[in-house]
Figure 1 (cartoon, rainbow, N blue to C red):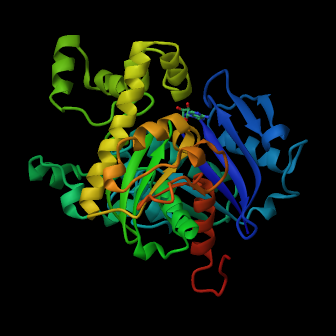
Figure 2: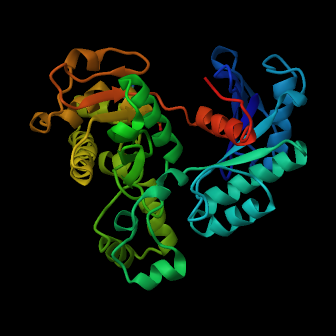
Length: 404
Ligand code: AMP
């Protein structure tokens, strides 16, 4: 079964065509700056990637281009659109309605729209992607996969904020989490690497990229996660501040004369590694600058590792122990220095990094020392495959079809 995985942003449309049974990527690409005069389209696998300047007024135009490039031109992946069996859409906010992926119908579309209040940019963009597919591929089944659904198992003591209860009742203000598809994928893969049932394990999963989140997964069930009502909460990130004293927000608004939208922008786009270092949101640039003696870059680096370390400690307490800590995304998969700093000093908790294994490169792998009671595992995330797999499973419900 070939599934077209769509991740629509407000001015972008990312896609992958995945053959689910063969676990094979057939094509991928991205339409960027959709709606502006500088829109362009990147399509193709690695060395075959082509970049085309292409006028795209909206997501409808972008989808038409995507479908055309899948069946025509030098980087075509299939002979005809009939070879796309289904579409899987990544949706950021599923609110209280969706604790799993679902087949998209009118009711699901209405609920995604209703939930846009909690994730205005993201859910509206996803709807544009859904409508574009409905227009260009009528009759092809579509599945919605939500970033939040994995965290619908959180107990109220973890998802409630200690604010007046009426705010929860009136506006559904609570923790929803994010990156759920990634945490679900790496927890399953970590269990496979450990060769133990997920249901027997206490895991802490760390998605450390430009956006960062960390989750406590107790016997296969998510019990806590660092992102909150929105993906701004929790760890320090590339440009996001993560958790801060909430009293800072009105203070800064008052003293800097900022509107709610401006202070939101400051916390989402001008903070984190970028805000502290003044150099970049990219950890590689911050690392290089700190090694060249830049003190603010060093501070940013130290704060980032400290932020992860504090969550690891608190989630060990939440679960009463941990069997494995799982790392993924750009920083988690690639940055040996950051991993060294995160795990430094955690020997008393039974967490010991193997310096040599930490230096080696590779795919899924264990990097803890033989003597470490807690395993440390790296799993490259694959959210698109998870979306394709959910799509396959929903469309084969009630049949004997199963994936290896
Ligand atoms: P992501 O959002 O998953 O693409 O991750 C982006 C982050 O990963 C950026 O901060 C990059 O600097 C960081 N990153 C990617 N590759 C490396 C690497 N080889 N060493 C250190 N950081 C890296």
